[in-house]
Length: 318
Ligand code: 5GP
Ligand code: MN
Image (tube, rainbow, N blue to C red; front, top):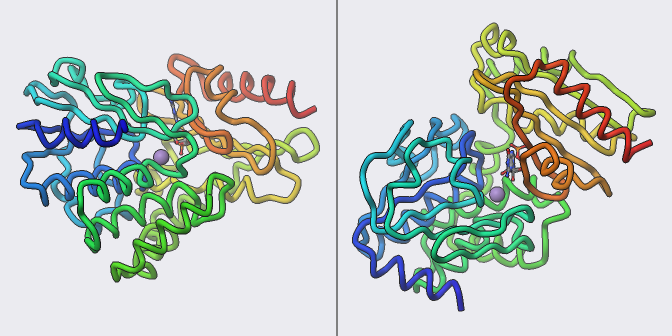
């Protein structure tokens, strides 16, 4: 079984680095922390690296303060574990291709093919956290409340609170098992999903004003400009989930949010019932899941990116 091979490799390695994608979300952070804590419980020397700061709403998670925010890695590790993405470039970390002897890739994106010496890609897992749950269990670690807190966060995030179509009975069984460790899921859900800073609240007010609807309200666009982030003192990670307001509008099948980043336009896509976001994101150089995907566009204006995407969406949603 591939999971056992991965565990064996991890337990045989002297130094382990765990990384994930830029603009980290709850699944990325939750699965990194859970794997890190499990390796620590086994007495292993593990470290975690990300390009961006841990989002404010996830800083309460156990060991979150141990994540090292770096632009580049110059050290060498026995093993690099790449989580929740199938592309080293998506870490946004320079020189990452030279920092390991062996690469292990664990992911659940339908657009991931798997890279490295050992990989486990399961697109029927609702979250990378579901796969890490199995790995932690196979490592013989049960009933660990700290690890369970991280994994519950992973799974809750990537299923939109057990609401998205990627949710399975296994997802619920795992969540039940995690709850049985005694985690405070009410606190987790409030922190991860419901609570927002005043700056996010004010940003939200501005972003909702940008709503554009097309094709008989089947397509909805929202926009976040650099100006809006600056004016409201909001951080990039506080744009998370705003897209759902557009997706949730009656008649909307597919929603897109355009976020002006420093050097590119980040586009997130969400669909409700039938539209394949992964396919479109892939066509634009990105990837993801069927109902949630994304891509980035460099060297193009916000207007051009919108126009191109709209043209492509109209082809399928007419
Ligand atoms: P989000 O829109 O919230 O950034 O991401 C939605 C899903 O699509 C996530 O699972 C995320 O990992 C994936 N995704 C977002 N942007 C990209 C991208 O540029 N490339 C790839 N391969 N996946 C992406
Ligand atoms: Mn994920």
